[in-house]
Image (cartoon, rainbow, N blue to C red; front, top):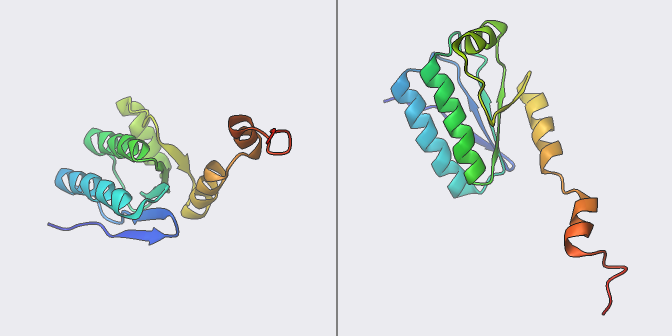
Length: 136
């Protein structure tokens, strides 16, 4: 069975789907991504679906499941490169792709991940106390 390559770029895993995915390939991708997240400790997953002409309900649900698995493993999933026809099909099928953020392309997806994983200094101070005002 064919497997989709999963590239590691820093703390991000990138999958570029350039062929129409069959159900078995989608399930294999789900399993492979989960294992790679565990193995690498990555904080983000970008799935580039530029090459997909059709996203059926099974593939749509599999993408949602991948996002859920990633979240449980402390990684965020962003789907990039969605064509307008694919978006229309997803809406017509009633698939909302819950838990999945989207971006126009890989570059914007990487920017979105970078912004979402930046530590928020104000929140850090609130959680751990401001070291300048903490008593010794």
